[in-house]
Amino acid sequence: MPFAHITGWGMYVPEPVLTNDDIAKLVDTNDEWIRDRTGIRERHIAREHEFPSTLAVEASIKALRVANLAPTELDLIICASSSPEYIFPATACLIQDQIGATKAGAFDLSAACTGFVYAINMAAQAIRSGSIKNALVIGTETLSRFVDWKDRNTCILFGDGAGAFVLQASEKPGGVLSAVMRSDGSGADSLTLLGGGSRHPASEATIHEGKHFVQMDGKEVFRFATRVMGRATLEALELAGMTTDDVKCIVPHQANYRIIETAAKYLKLSMDKFVVNVDRYGNTSTASIPIATVEAAQDGRVMPGDKVVFVAFGAGLTWGAMVVEWTGPIPTKKHVHPEQYRIIARLRSFVRRAIRFIEGFLSRKEL
Ligand code: UT7
Figure (cartoon, rainbow, N blue to C red):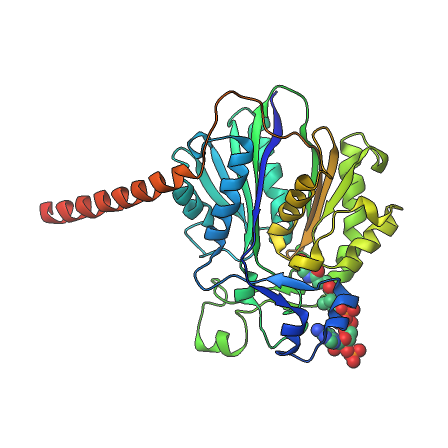
């Protein structure tokens, strides 16, 4: 049975930075309160022309470059997002078109901030089953578009960004070693974005009632998060036959510094064992784990052979954890430039649209 290795990684955040002082000009809050209660100092906010797919493309090209893999070799793209571009088509399909992944299946996965952990596990299982060889898994968000900038409970928390991993099959043991995925829909109302779905289609009333904004019972989510983070970590470690002593570091969902601290206390670990960058990006939901991991890999904090835990929680309620052995690119003599495929992809997309238009025109004439 092949193993599913993480062979490439990339991240991208939009350039504009919104500091706590900037937010204090919008709502009744201040830098000290936000830093004390959340650990966040600043977050990046997407510009008007940036969307989950465009952020994801930047992160994905970087991940493919690290893996030295052409987009045309991808079999599957899974995009986890809490702020997808549309209800449909899937953001994953927009990414597939823009990077030129000509033979990849593509779909979105909705498990809120736990989405990236779920998605890595789904891609890994597809590789383990032998049905695919190469997968691209993305977490991408422009949650700033769904935040009520008059609500100080939520607008201080979220940031935009994207992170991507390439997963590849190899007979060499390693890669994704274990995973747990959990949910509890009885807590569905603690963290919601109700408007625009089939229960509350967009209308004047839904806009008036603020249903198109993130709504959150912060205290409830905080309590839930501190309950599940440590437990899920231990469950994933037990499945892999390991303890926290075997682990180089834990990359938790970056929602709140205090939540991570509580998990560290529960696990009787020092905060040094946790990768934390919530101070610079805020909560980027599905993108938070890959962004933190990419930074850790770039800093040399995560090296090939290291055992790493990813642990996340989010709306749903959902939570999950996984243990991976960090790999890095599979050695090969070929040298791939994934960014060059973007130009061909744009041309290909244009030609395919033109063909569809002509076919439509001709078939109308025939009818
Ligand atoms: O991916 C999952 C996403 N969500 C989360 O992870 C959220 C988890 N929850 C949290 O991170 C925290 O609950 C928050 C950061 C949202 C809030 O922190 P808290 O320590 O739970 O504060 P609180 O809601 O208990 O509010 C304490 C006080 C209240 O005032 P009173 O009632 O004591 O007078 C709030 O009105 O702080 C007030 N407050 C603020 N003050 C200044 C609430 N938000 C703010 C603010 N600035 N932004």
